[in-house]
Length: 252
Ligand code: G3P
Ligand code: CA
Image (cartoon, rainbow, N blue to C red; front, side, top):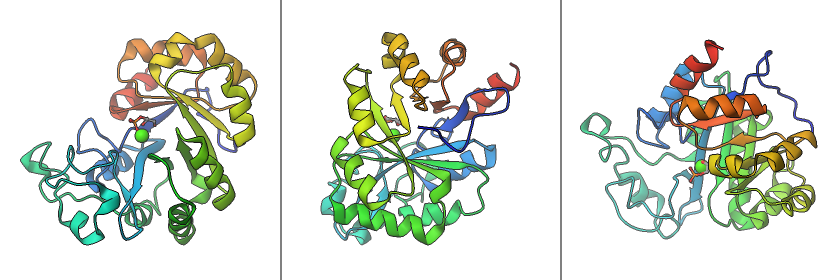
């Protein structure tokens, strides 16, 4: 299960900006992604869904309700309707004008990014929709700097078949022993638990790491966590506050 990139020379965990730099900017928008890029986060995590036109878009929820000025289910909305929604004003007037980005726009913006992209497929994806993501990835040449992750085994199976050149990760709330068979069947490189799952099943997580899986833990925002995660040797920490995590790690 080896992964070509390794965390920093002293085996510090990677800093992974959750939904972009969501601690300072509206999640999964261009300004949040740009803030993480400028910070020099090792990785940027984003979530993707698909519009009714079949365009991959960067959005965490199934609907636009929580994070935009519009309401409705993204998969039932046209690109045009989605593009009209304001995805920044919910966090403050300074972010008015942010939109729900298209995946291909984000990939193009990250072409000269010195870091890596952790892309989460939200919900279940059809092969046709995954093929659209494959097209976007191929068009921008980021394949060797990405991990594709999902909670859904069916989606990961289809991703393996359609985008085989990109590393994959299985997301889990709480790790279970039977996930070893699942992770092996899915041929994933990463096994990524919640922070709660990590603390509940640390010994099991350490078994996954000993067997060669990379382990990226989400979403962890406080130094008390980071101390324990680092001591356990996890490969990356997914955080809303990548700046604070950078500062914490540089003092170590
Ligand atoms: O990267 C994994 C983590 O983001 C999963 O939880 O709800 O923030 O997408 P969520
Ligand atoms: Ca996510």
